[in-house]
Image (cartoon, rainbow, N blue to C red; front, side):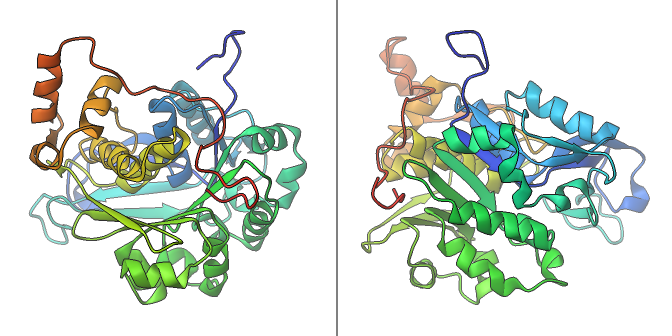
Length: 378
């Protein structure tokens, strides 16, 4: 993505955290039945950055990778997806983390079941676990963090090491007017088995936008009820709760809430949908869309991930997005997303309206129009 001078467009969103090489099986079933693993890349924060770039929001990813082929693949693939990787450090001593994906649906013994997947991580001692507050003195990272109106973090990073926890605390403490901080819980119980999860709530409560699933909140904090979660985390301007019934609720500080159902989707593979939802919601926030449209844009992005075999999914074109954001409740509920495309009465109406129907802008200038300049909260 380029600006008017032909250089890289300034990142409007910075996503910070570990990403890893991914090895994807050539068939469903337990590992003993897999013949070949195909290399790919994946990670919550880089998934969000790639999805934001796909939505037309210039995005950067900050992290560390090993001086190895996996690290080069990570940065190369993300750069090809339009993500700014100029502040990714190469660690000469530590490797890039790796995970293997297991998918169900083979009917063999030990199969996970159709439509289910599990990730097996090999990340201990990875390059990204050496992220620390020293990053803030790096000129490339400091420039991105200074200029971008959005910083996106997740609960994965503080679980990686004491240095990573110190970095997240430093980023949350270094607030400045005009910058929004979003924080996705991304609860990973395995990462917290040897660490103290009580450090998490203050981090989440220091964000402007808090995103979390009801099921993971139940596991981590003992409740998945949106109102109870809102009470548990009073400081964020918006708390977005995704529940198991495919509803997402956004709750503000004043007691207001908006709930929007997910689209009907023929699921191919579920991994990456939460990151895609976060990207869609945050893109809508940066564009100044109303709360319901932000939730719908999140659902659209998540549907794209659910119908793809990789963590990175193709997103609908801007006119399709605009038509679905403007759809009434009946047309939204009747919409079906499959690997072959989107079938919706709203799109039929758009086609009938002709080629001059308005499109959703890919980018907007300036900081989010809902930002409270005095507090740094939207």
